[in-house]
Length: 262
Image (cartoon, rainbow, N blue to C red; front, top):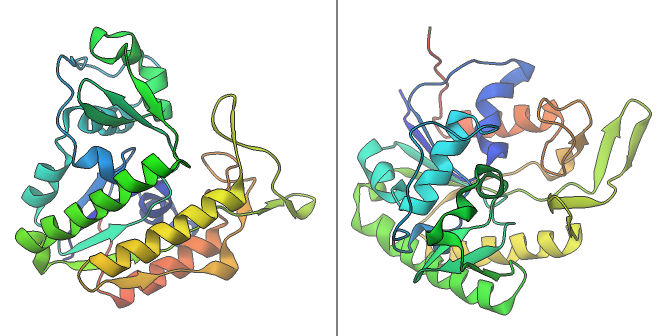
């Protein structure tokens, strides 16, 4: 049975939920590392941060766990301890700005904004590093090299590595038919340019492939169509069911299996 670790976003996690159009329930043998960025993964824990015992109002347990892992920097240890047979990377969550604070880096995700943690003294002096800036590019490329070295030096070297190549969809499927995507917000009030972020993803994937050990690649460019009826709502990376079906077929060919709790 495969043990799959995802270092990425909901587009890969949703493969288990929407495989064949069906909700599979709670998958087992799956580790999901999300709402982070490569520079944040390799930064030091945020000094003085105090997570709540229970998720703040408005956050579900899994997103809260991901947020706390990004701030406390526990994801890499969890990844190694999980001993995955497959590690799937996707970079759709690499859309958020970085925050420099207290000598470390964290990810300025929606979950961070919604959690109320920004009001803690540990985060009050956070300075934004815009995602589409040269500074962010330098930090990301450095972290990609660190990740490559980390994989080679740990049991992750024995896993099958997979790059899930994805882009923001520039078209949407609605009840009226297929139409262009309208304005996109990364966070409320922060609009984003689809083309610029897709260019960034292409650069990230190229650089990542150059430094990492050999990776398989899964992609379905012709099926990258946003779905108005998606369970999580309309977004340029919430795709139509055909997309998930095709990516799942490719993962199965690489030995990925799905198993859910009874």
